[in-house]
Image (cartoon, rainbow, N blue to C red; front, top):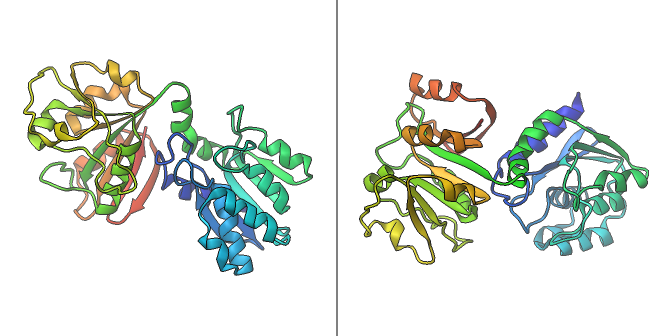
Amino acid sequence: MLENYYMSKAIKKAWRYQLLTYPNPAVGAVVVKENKIIACEAHKKAGDTHAELEVVKKAYHYISDDKKIMKIKEPQKIYDYIIIHHNNIFKNCDIYTTLEPCSHEGKTPSCAKLIKKMSFKNVYIGSLDFNIIASNGAKILKNANIDVSIGISKQNCGILLSPFYKYQQGGFCFFKLAMRADGTINHGQISSKKTTKIVHKLRSLVDLLVIGGNTVRTDRPILDTRMYKKSSKNPDVLIYSKKTNFDKTIKLFEIKHRDVTVSSNLNKATKNKFVMIEGGFDMIKAVHNHIDMTMLIVNTTTSKSEKYQKFVDKYQLLYRVNIANDTIYYLL
């Protein structure tokens, strides 16, 4: 079915920003005109344009060639500009979105109301929004006599949304492991600069970063967000260790406005809503009961080994994203 194909493109786009949208869900959207994808976008971070508004912006530019729209960055101003200038150019277009368009007005305008005013021919939704405040977008569209199809690639859209749903239920904890394709995890930098920047973005978002005591003593890390220039926030750190003595000249202790705790249990981690654990094979074994998802970053510039393949095969693959020389595996 073409509907599933178009939705798969929206899903793929959204996975590139998985977790980076915290506390919002990762959402992707596609606009199709005459069986051709003319725009494919995703929500990139909380406070920025939602996927639907961003994809309508790009589609508007594609159809109208109005270059002014691409210079507008603020969600409300984008919304207002399109409302004034759209001239019904979307009446023969379809829009696909992995999550039901939001109905509420917050930091960003209502996506459902935008789609309604654009008079899209068809709207395809992957998953309904169970958030009481944001839901009812589909109802708004149906009441405007727009054809709405719900449940397109429902399972894959549900997998995309699973970290968000887990977070809403009380908290989400994921493990980040970097590995080369030959199975090694030591001897210096592993990930590409692009992927490392993603990790630093995630550090700026999490409520707590957990790391093993052996890693602290051996690697003497700083665990900051220096590669993400848009944030000055560095995460609080929990060192998971039975031994409490550490060299305080290790750089992670020198970060200002950071709380560093040493503990032989993960009680503090369970009290935070968004938690990232970094470490190697021993660490992931030690904390596996606390992990909701594993983010495995594999540098593919070396030959694949049996050790690497065995590790991946132990898990259920949720999705895989290729970035530069790395592949990010989201594993359950």
